Image 1: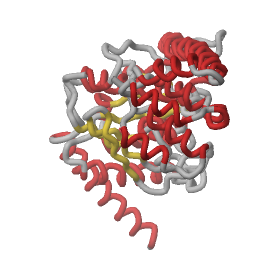
Image 2: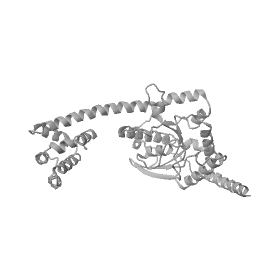
Image 3: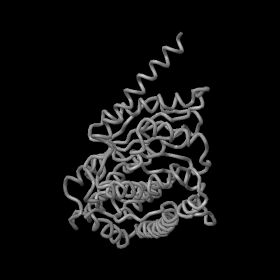
Length: 369
């Protein structure tokens, strides 16, 4: 059984004091006698040139030696004359990290309650039995909505270029594949609709042309699209631009795409994160009561809506949110019984694409005259 993350973090955080004060040779002998280290480990550690490097190698090695390694090392320090203060330092740091960990968990629990409007039946994506082993997720949204950053949140690293701007930083359609607990997830990022750097009096035409390119890309994924993530900013009201963006999507893909659509609200911390701020569920209820275009959108997606904070600066919060995000997406896929936007729907989309291409060519010829 592996050493706990808390124990490993404690060793990492106290490495500086260990490299200054730990006499590594007798520590190696003791841990060999307890079956934690072996002769090869000793040779690898002793082969290091400086005493500091030897201690670093020693700590790196015992981190890989299971749950017994840490308490045996602490016991050695407590009973070794001149090393008692090191045991005290490690105990102190462990308690600090435990306290901080408790605070982080409580902080996440508060965010989790406020960011999500439906409960997941499982805590990890691998626990969902009725979802495919390969999942395709396509991101669509207005420029500046946080679409690429949302893709990075799903992936867990900065693969897609993202920036807070009214001009699209995603120039072409891009995709990344990750393996998450045995499930292959392809995340497809697309250029932002309603790009102010490109928009002119023919905004509708520009959006539809871009959706044509996106539709062509979708057709190349012969296993279909399991989820469309329609990304909007939670801090910006649902404007005419958002309505026109959705109109362009509907025109090319048809309303059938809503069956596989989840609305993602970015900037969640700014909108829902404060103690006195409303939760996502309160927000959804208020929008439905008020009526209007956003309420219509929520009805179309069966209230499948998730709030996401793409700018957490804490690794723990980022990973907890990512786990929850993936579970929410798996929940929707399972509820859809694995149905994808494909087969007959793809054929219908392809016909729409062809018809739109014909109309566009006619339009271009007319403009050239």
